[in-house]
Amino acid sequence: MDNGTDLSERRVTRNRQPSRSPLIQASGISRVYNHSGARIVVLNQLSFKLGIGETIGIVGASGIGKSTLLHVLGTLDRPDSGILEYSGKDVLKLDDSQLARFRNRAIGFVFQFHHLLPEFSALENTMMPALIGGESKKTATTAAEAILVRVGLKDRLTHRASELSGGEQQRVALARALVLRPAILLADEPTGNLDRKNSERIHTLLMELNQEMGMALVVVTHNMELAALVSRQVTIANGALQEFH
Image (cartoon, rainbow, N blue to C red):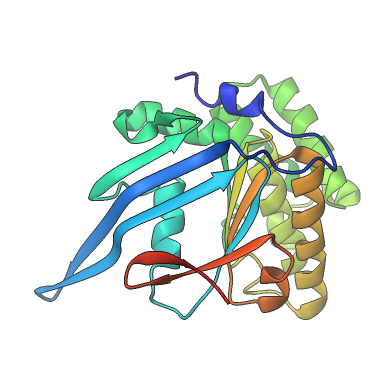
């Protein structure tokens, strides 16, 4: 596997419909936890498929396994069993170092909390995935500046994260997730800590960037306004994926 470059080559262009070819195909995914001697089955032989450029919202009550599924899809957590294929290759067969390199290049993450380094500037925070991925400082800087300008932070490049508002911090987190132009963005309650105005701005950015960059989007959310914007809504019941109605 070439650390995700095959994924980037298959992005769709602006305003094209998502491809029917699966970017991600998961089958037989199970995840079990033991809590105080009790066996808790969170994911049970779950199957999941995501097309290139497709948008999916995972909705439902807390505790049903939404974030667990997102972490498995993002290769942050290995399931107890199952197959997870990206562009036809089972990434769970990679060792931890190979998987980390793949994740860095192919997947972007945005969480409810921005997880920025407070004493680093918006530009420095955004550059980090590129530097970790082996890009030169010049290349990383150019890419970070471009995506920060795109998310509306042209005048905040040198501001420390601690000097930014909550909405600005989350836009930096979004820029950081997209600086390497990953094939997929995984978002876990990305507007959970924001007011309505900033939430709407993030919602708009997510959908615009999905079109502009051709990235697939999987978002875990309780925000039904955000869920209504994606092309498909699913939930988890008894550890399996179900269409949400």
